[in-house]
Image 1 (tube, rainbow, N blue to C red):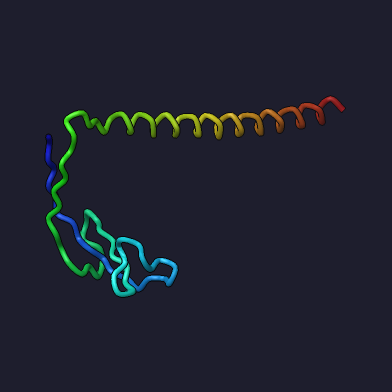
Image 2 (image 1 turned 180 degrees about the horizontal axis):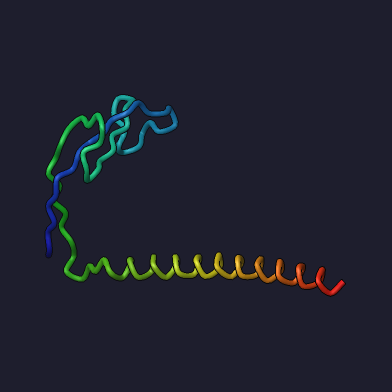
Length: 96
C-alpha cells in the first residue's frame, strides 16, 4: 500500500438550505478542502491518503486525454466545414 501526504486548507462559506445534510455541511456552513491556501482559509490540515497497490493514475489521465482529443477533433472538423462552406459561397459568386 502506498501513502501520499500533503498539506490542505479548509475554506468555509454559508450554505444554501438544499445543501443541508451533505457530508461537508455543518451548522449551516459548507466546508471545502483545497491543496492550496485560499483567501479566507479557516484552517490547515495534513492529509494522508492510502492508495491500493494496483492504483495507476495514468489510466484515468489517458481516458481524459482521449475524450479531449475526440472533442477537439469534432470542433476542428466543424470549423473546417464552415470554412469550406465560405469557399463554396465565394466560388459560386465568382461563377455568376
